[in-house]
Each structure stands twice: as structure tokens, then as C-alpha cells.
Image 1 (cartoon, helix red, strand yellow):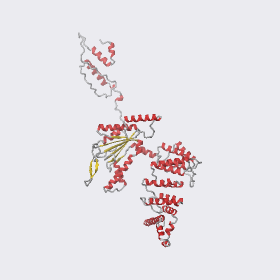
Image 2: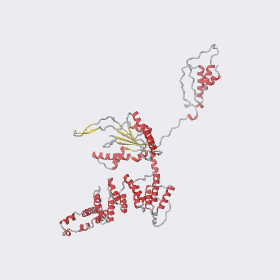
Image 3: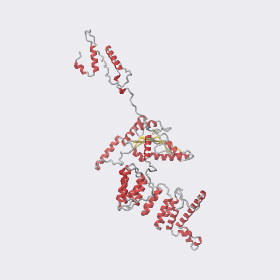
Length: 624
């Protein structure tokens, strides 16, 4: 008999039932006990109370290798029948299909693969987006770039954004291994920091911090060799074992050595969001590609009818990231910045509004702090106006410290609101405000002005003609002539033409000094700069008058000698006549009068052609 402790040892109720049935079902007439079979009988598996299959599904179990007694088979059939007849075994929440995720309404459009590209490009773009998790993927097809870039011939470049520095290096390392394993491509990853190298750099930084006696050696925003923010993965579709060979020109003469330009070079620029916005490589390569497309069409003798045609050619080679959600967010942000051109408040019937008095420094401070506390919108132009008011508002002197403190507060608020503050317009506003400030010459403001001018030179600020003229007038008013001439020479450093308004400002500033030596030293080379401008400047209007005034200061007798007739020079000797003929500023005045006569005749012909009144002085814009 089966003892109670032995039966209790089996925790499974189904196993206990099977053993009890096997013992009870033996025939009573048997005079001896049969020995246990050598083949072990597989016990039926325990069934779950709740099945994940449907009620009408048929469950087929694998038959046991050992024979099943008829009583067991009958019992199992009865149990199966009961389970099939009892629908309450399947819970209600399993009778319905599981819910499915709705389709993404803002699907990201991946760049389309250009024709003739390597086959690895399509699975690679999907891997970059789905497995690496990089966003904002863009593609530039620069295979028509002539001459080819230094990265390689037939260049196809992709740009992608990583979420963080850690994500950037981990995903780039996995991408290199994926190329090697699945496509047998040995890619090069510039800027990638491996785990071993990272541990070495961190150990060296900790050692350096310990020697310096600081808590950390990683300076925020500094170049510590770890926060690269940019990994460039590149490979070529052709074999790397290409030997250089001798090259010959069309005439059959030897021209040098070089490798054949075959295959396609694929470059993947993986960057963090801040580094991608800082470098803006897409705009750089678009400019290079646009220039190459224009030169190629001109070399083939094809004519470009309009700039739109060139933009269409460029758009076929450039695929920038397009996200419907991002476009909707940009449209919403743009709509929130709209301003009404009307007001719903009643208008008071009154004469012209009286001019408001100029606010002092304390009023400017209170008005800006009110905007901060209330949270009113603040635009870029308002920031510039607040800085001008802070620098030029009247106050009890010395007030340079108060002015600079308010300017720091304005710049900090603009930076917190996401504005780009260090622009060319900002440098112009700060420098011009410092020159026009009533606190000019005080030590704190002078030190800040010097620092701003140094940063302006390092940043290579490119001011337009209006800003250049304003700075020239401000420097001339303060008598800072070295800065005056540095500002005048800045446009030529970037190959930008100067307008007639800039030269008019320079001539007026020199004539206003009434210093003959100063005008003689500088007038001749400034005049040469004006004559050698890419577009000839019309010798007319304010430019003509200011130049003649400067010549009168440099050579007071030039105008009288130019008006004198040939009979008046009979009393002079031969050498005296030669000296008059070679007089520098007399020759310059003759040339200026000839240019003025030519320009006046041209304007007169234009007025006659257009049917204008010949006595009316033409009102010309800068472009005209």
C-alpha cells in the first residue's frame, strides 16, 4: 500500500491522482504482484487553469511512448470532454484579440536612396534610424562635385543627430561592428572613443585633478578630449588595396602619379544636437555643391536661365530631414508670434501725440524688470533697443558700473529665452553704444569696450555698409583714428565692396578735422581704394561734395588753379608749369570734375529718356 507520507511527498495533485488510480485499478484475482516496469511512465503535464488559446481550438498532445491503461485513457477523454464543454475555463479578457498600437500619425520620412548608390546604403539608413536611434537624418549626394572632396571621390554624405554624448559613442561603435559583421566593410570612425580609451582618459584626468588639488579636471565647455560631440564614420565601396600608377595627359606625356578615382565614398556625420547646430556642415556643403553645379554647367556651355533653376538642381541633390510633427510645431510657434495690425480699444480723438521725454537709466531698468516679472514677450529688436538705452540713457555720473550691470542682465535674460545673442548686430550695438555713452572714458567702460573689440576681431564680424558708417562716425567723434582706419579696412578683408555712403563718411570726417597734414597722408590712398572698387561709384551728390571739401583742406589752392585759364600761367617759368601740372591734388581734382561731368551727363540722358524734368535733381538709392 502507498503510505500517507509518500503520497504527501508528491505536491502535485494530478500526480497523486494518477498514482492512486494506478494502484486501485489492479485486478483483485492476481495472486502475485507484478514487478515494476523498467520503462518509466511520463506523467501528464499540469494544465493551467486559464489557457491563452481559444475555446474551439483543438489541443493535440504528444502521445506517450509507454502504453496508457484503458481507465486512464477513459478518464483523460472525460476530462477533455468536460474542458471542451465548459466555456468558463477561458476568461473573458482572453476571448478578444489583443489591442494593437495605432499607426504613428507623424511618420518620419527617411532620405530616398539615389540612383547608382551602393546596395548597402538602404539597409544602412534603416539601421541608423531604427537600431542606432539617431534622428534628423539628411543626405547630400555630392557625386557630381568637381574636383572631388578630400574625403574621397563620388561622395555621399549623411548627417544624423544623437541624443547625448554617451549615445553618440555607443551607437557609432555598434554601427562600425555592424558594417564589419553583416557587410564585410572596414569603416573608419574618426572621433570615436572606445571603452578602453575612455577609461584611460578618465584615469589621467583624475590623476591631473589630484595633482592640481581640485575635485574634478573636466572643465565645463572645455576641450577635455572626452566631450567630442562629433564622430565621422567613412568607408569606400571599392577595395582599399589600390596602388598608385603613372598618369599621362591627352598628348601622351607623363603627368604624375595617382590612384584611379573609382568607387563611392560614404560618410556618416554623427553629432550631438548642439555640435550640429554649431558647425552647420549642411549649409557649408550646400554652398560648395551649388558652386560646383554652376561651374559644371558653365564648363559644358549650358546657360543658367534663373537662380530658381540652380536651386532646383541643388534640391535634387540635397535631402534635408522632414518631420510632420516638427513642421506643425514650427507653424504653431510662428502663429504664436503673430501680432495684430489693429486694436480693439477705443481711439481718443486728439492731435498729434506729444514726443515722450528720453527715459533715464533708472526708468530703463524698471521697464526691463517689469517685462521680466510679468513674462511679456521680448524680441531681438527689443533687446538691441534696451541695450542702446542702457548705454546712452542719462544718469548721474559715474554710472559705467550700473550701465554694464544692466547690460549683463539684459543679455542673460535673452540667453535664457533661447535667443542667439553673440551676433554681428549685437557687437555693433554694444560697441556703438559704448562710444556714444555719456560714461565714455571711465575705466570700467573702457575695459569692456576693449574686450568687445578684441572679441569682434576674433569672431570676424562682418558689418554692413550702414553699420560701418555708423562706427566710423562714432570713432571720428571720439578722435580714435587707429580704430577708425581699422573699421574702414574691415570690409576689404572679407572682399566686401564699400558703398558711396561709407566713403562720404570718411571724407567728411577728414575734412571736419581741418588738418592739412592728416588729409594729405590719408586722402590719396582712400581715393585709390574708391577708384578700385568692383562697382564704380557715381561721383554725384554728397560723395562729390565731401570729396571736394577734403581736397580743399589738403590743397587750398587746387580749386583756384583749376579755374585759372592758360593765359594766367604765362608768367610762370617752364619748371613752374611742370610743378603745377604734376601737382597731386590738382590732378585729383581734375579727375573728380571729369567724373562728375560724366555722371551728370549720364543722369541727364536718363531723365530725357524717361521723360523727366531736366531741372529736377535725381533721388538715387544706393543700388541705383
